[in-house]
Image (cartoon, rainbow, N blue to C red; front, side):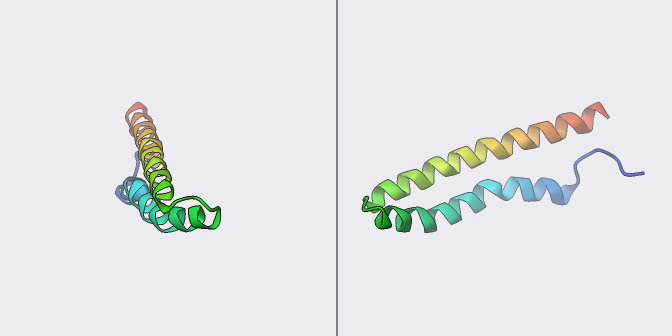
Length: 72
């Protein structure tokens, strides 16, 4: 029977979410800003905002995973 505790690989993947979001958004946001006629600096600012959002989302998911693991 499988336990409800989060596995090490799952926690590793969730911990990498902000890094992946940062890399993707740093690549895509300036190009998208250029296509929309905005400055690339604005695209980089958007990338930073997306990274912060990704960090907090992954942190909330990790916190929920640990709380479920402890209650089981």
